[in-house]
Amino acid sequence: MNLDELFTEENFILDTSRDIAEQTRLDAEVYRQALLTLNGHYQRLIRESYRLIARSDRAERELTLLNAQLQRLAEKLEYEATHDALTGVYNRNAIISRISTTLQQSDAALILLDIDHFKNINDRFGHPRGDAVLQELIKRIECTLPGLASIGRVGGEEFTILLPATSLEAAVIIASTIHAALNVAPLVALPGQLVTASFGLSWGARHSCFEELYAQADRALYQAKRDGRNRLRWG
Image (cartoon, rainbow, N blue to C red; front, side, top):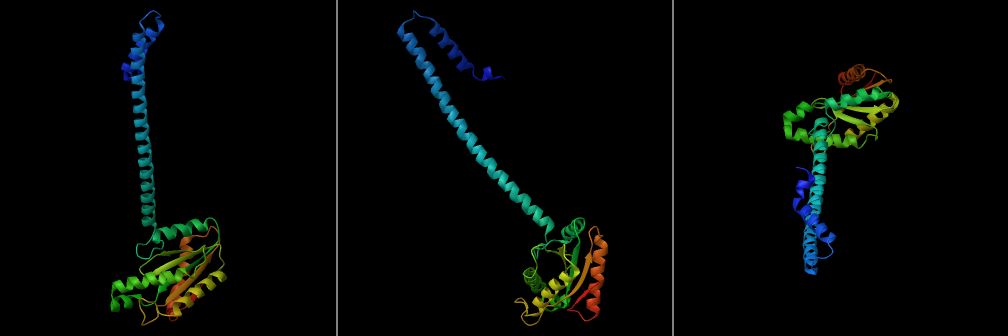
């Protein structure tokens, strides 16, 4: 259907009005009726235009709202795909990806920490208490981290902290601050005992391999465990 077919009646009235206007000897009442008819249709078109504009505005508002909802949903899905549901830090895949990407751009230090005897906490107090311990412990750790740091959960009670453009010496200071924060007082979730962690640190130059950097930190972590836990080691 073309536009002329959509406005068949209006075109007919316009053509009729034009024909009448071109004639100079018709009775005044004929002109008056033609003008009234033309005016009536014009008013109807104005009303329809207002209605369509209102509908268009409503549709635009609904579309804007829908786009905002879709954006929030996309952000939610992105967050859930990259973050650990319990602690809110990056999940294993996301933190590994961030480490690998960072190493393509700069040097980086890595802190690998494992909560000491966490299985005993779960066995003795139950998994809900263990979950609460993890959540509170991560909050305490995050309070000590510089803004450039990223932390991810790579195992049940094992976490990795990425420090871009950070020397090994600076990473040792940061890890020592975390270590001290965990030893200063018990967690509210487990007031009867300290929850400590063992730390392994490594450093890699730009373009280093993630696997090598992680393996180096992992070896240092296991050395800290062999040496009695609740301590830092680096390689």
